[in-house]
Amino acid sequence: SQKIEQNSEALNIQEGKTATLTCNYTNYSPAYLQWYRQDPGRGPVFLLLIRENEKEKRKERLKVTFDTTLKQSLFHITASQPADSATYLCALTGYSSASKIIFGSGTRLSIRP
Amino acid sequence: ETGVTQTPRHLVMGMTNKKSLKCEQHLGHNAMYWYKQSAKKPLELMFVYNFKEQTENNSVPSRFSPECPNSSHLFLHLHTLQPEDSALYLCASSQADGGNQPQHFGDGTRLSIL
Image (cartoon, rainbow over all chains, first blue to last red; front, side, top):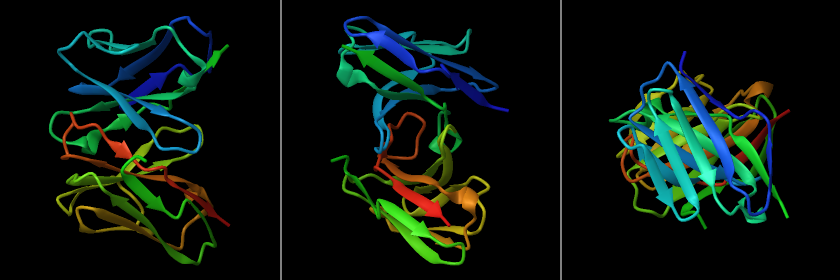
């Protein structure tokens, strides 16, 4: 069955360092991969989308890579700040519809001052 | 303010009750979604509406009944729910129903079944 695996353990990072989160998937050939941030008691907030033919995408301090051979995406936050502490979700979608969207369980990131 | 408003934020109901969850989006989007988020489990897509037409029902039990009267409003009618239905129910919208469309989520309704 289609599956996404994200770092199951919480990630604790010192402020100022680069946080790297992993998203691995199986039995899926996605057209797009998305990353979302979710804070406690809130809904997910969209951060970045990367296409299958893109290797890397950046937005401010965020960088996403997408390797369809390894079936893996890496999500980097550079110069991390305590305000970056949240749960980060990755999601895969096909071309034509969001009806086949699948989400990972998320990785909880804590940035300590 | 996410542009997607869900009410109520919290709901406690007995297994024999009937209640409805409401979602309203102010973003001018044409697609709306219902998701279920249980503790330590991935978000599960339940229903998809595109231009008010239901395009997906991911094997959701009939005790959950969606309604989309227009592109801005989405309801989830609940009846005779089970304890395992306790979860956070999230509504989302996107410009269109496409894989490349970012989804905009509301903050959810926390549902507890007694």
